Length: 320
Image: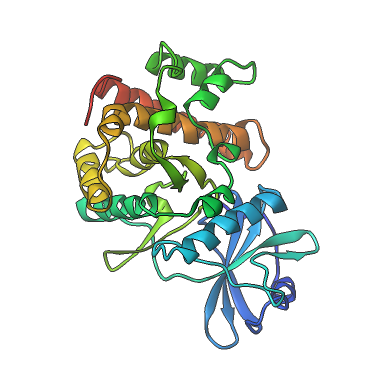
């Protein structure tokens, strides 16, 4: 988390001229982003907005992300927020070297992980997976593998020269036979969040307000989304390993909104392990191989270590 773009009040007001929101009187940097710089901006009318400056994606990638949010709004998904449109009706501003979006500011914080919050997160994910989206609208949304990593793309990376040695060793320990035998094509697909860690949910007074950071969302398999969400949300108090009781409550909440298929239950433990490696590889690409924030160069290791602990608890043939 961090702020990567330096900006002042004058520059913020220049950006706000693209909108009909009025002027800013103050702003404060927040730390709720990894690949964005985020600023809580107070307007002259007393209202607050969230100004996001993109640091780690192209304009096209940002446009694709906003297309997903537009579809979710059109299909009345209640757990996503939607950007203000510019005067020209665009969801994205582009000013000098800055481009990004402006959202309503949501009064909420990432939750303390417990049975209640984890059930609510699980149910919200199920409601996303349950949306009945027309084929043409779904086709207008990018594939998840353009912004995230499934089992086969992780395996390809492991076999490449750029793969860190410890990442390769962890993957081969967990998947000694690889992941090619997973029957990917038979799993249901639709819009997935792609990064539903607990801190990508905002709660207020114990109730889920919204999910945030759809930056890795796209068309993908629900089983991968479940694996990522469980691996990043169902953790014990010190966040060192998976809490199986929390997984049970997550799935209880999920099945209030969508029933898992038998094949999904069969592969869910495997999906959680793939989920760990998926986000670890995302971190490698940005921090180990990239130059976004060198202080986070090795933070992929916390995920591979959690995965190895989980693997010692549950074999690939187990079910929850």
